[in-house]
Amino acid sequence: MSKKGSADLVYILGDAFRSLRENVGTTILTSFTLAFSLAIFSLFVFVITNLNAVVEGWGERTQMIVYVKDASVAQADALKQAVLKVPGVKSAEYVSKEKALAELKEELKGHESILDGVDANPLPASFEVRVADEFNQPERIAEVAGRIKALEWAEDVQYSREWVEKLSSFIRFIQFAAIAVGVFLGAATLFIISNTIRLAVYARKDEIEIMKLVGASDMYVKAPFVLEGLLQGFFGGLLALCVLALGRYAVLGEIPAYLRFAVEMPFSTPVFLAFLIGAGMLMGVAGSLISMNRFLKV
Image (tube, rainbow, N blue to C red; front, side, top):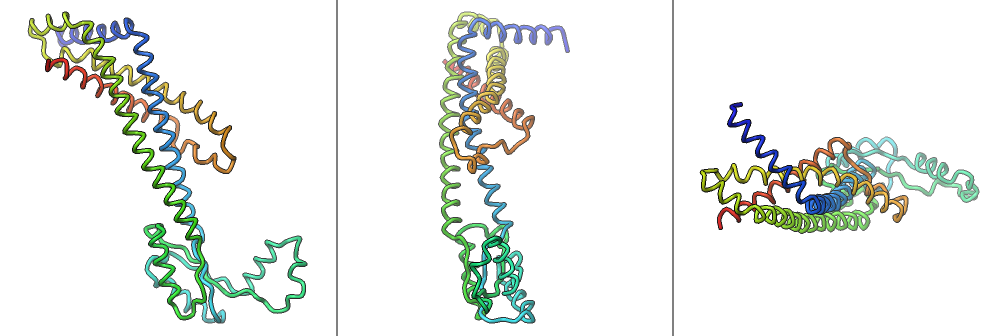
């Protein structure tokens, strides 16, 4: 690096840090505003990611029970092949009447007397069917169920359609809310950062005008303020992780235990911290550039 380049870098760094020291209160306020914005948005991301994981996990479990009218064990393989040929079916497992009764007795362990007096096995044979991942939407699951029910040997098809529809609707609502909140918080944060930088710019208006008169480029003038926004974003990203941790701690104490999974961190801490810092620095630079571009056009 040339002597001039080194001198320019020293000036840019020194100017940025001097501005941060002179406006320490505003810098702290801006960093905390950015931290709260990132923390709130991150909480929505946690909820969406964890709920989607629940849906995907549910997709790996039994999704439908297909009850068979009258079929012998010998016919099970032929019926299974018929089920597997239905578009959208991932797998099917035959459950004989005997196996179904054995599973019922296992579930009633300690209360077997309920079955006293029952001579014949009242339970029908069935298939436990799993649907392919690309069919994990309520409408598509209903299509698969309709096709299976159309098979002449299928007595009935049961699946938790209402639960799936409600969960899918809830996830869509959370996703929409996260996008809306993210846009609002992002816009508000950019507004605060750009106006904070603008105050620093106007406080040094004369100095900047002199620099322009002696031939300083726009990039040279912008550099200290962009670095200032970058540092504010860096500190905001670090603070965001602390705010998020405190927020999760407060929320966990107010929600039922069975819902706490929704606010668990679904990513590794180093990766998520890198994301927060990167997002904070990006917003800090964007706010600085918005402010400087407006000022230099005046």
